[in-house]
Length: 127
Image 1 (cartoon, helix red, strand yellow):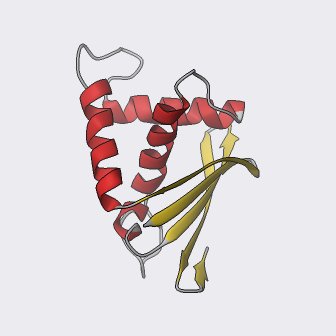
Image 2 (tube, helix red, strand yellow; image 1 turned 180 degrees about the horizontal axis):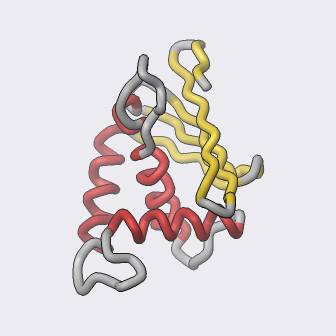
């Protein structure tokens, strides 16, 4: 079981708890529900849609629809898909879900998002 805390510009947004199976099912469900049909010219791919939803949440500092649970799942999927940027821990954060808890703080910038990440594993903190 992992815990993922998400904040926007330092203000808590939500805390998600679950395991690898929960994430796999959630990601598959999102792709099934939102990855079909005619591509929207503004969001030609599922990943474009996810990024747009996350950007809107980060810019507003809150969920933007009446379906916060789905938006939360988009945010978790997006954040875990990001590269660690650490050559000693290559790959995406998703690959470390089984052993780490994460805290993500998203800050909107004119050119995208600044994401500050903290991972905790057996009392070791990595930034």
